[in-house]
Length: 289
Picture 1 (cartoon, rainbow, N blue to C red):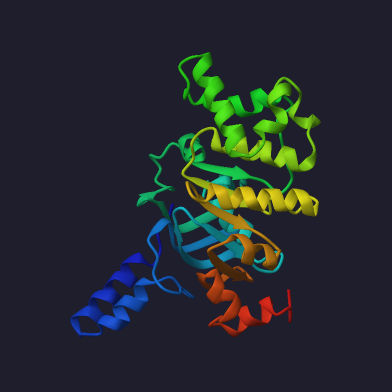
Picture 2: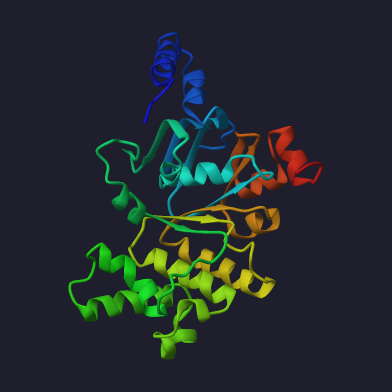
């Protein structure tokens, strides 16, 4: 991954410190549009994404904390899903994509050429907009990841991982007696919870959710939101949503994207009640979007 602008930024900060402009140095170290500083699990600096000649993301810098839900909001096509896919390098599968800047998880550059992308995607699970269970049994849907990553030494250990993951996903009581049934036989909301169980079965550190409730009815949506609130105690969750009400309900941090730029980020309460940027205010009050 190409890191651009880091040397210039470092020189600028050193000059600010040398001349006594400590406040200026501190501010320049923060991402654009940032609120109070947070301890970051995932940190991005100056990320640009291109699809061919089209630039989809422009100079995105953001800090995302552990054990919290961070919501990405903004109009369709603003770049929030593109950035989400950068965090587990799903954009690598698109031949025309090009990413520059730096993204780290616990300080480790995830675009380091020496990094094993398969292991990265075990650390960073993903739940997609439309439930996508494998055409396998409920049991095998959850067991697949731990099996290929060698997380269980024997069948009893694998059984324990499957049952624990289904329990954490709030699905075990509903499927305990039919683990051999096809995952596709479940309702839409159950399928999405099965996909969440599949994601957490490999013990990820970060869970990405790309509009996980957009295809679900209100009752299933409420159950998924309850589950997200429970999971945040143990995982860093990053969620793309078009529903500002949902972002307000389930997230602790919010980042607002517009036309490929990260406009503002901060505590969810502050973003929705006292945004610093006029564009953010216009969006959350429905003046455009």
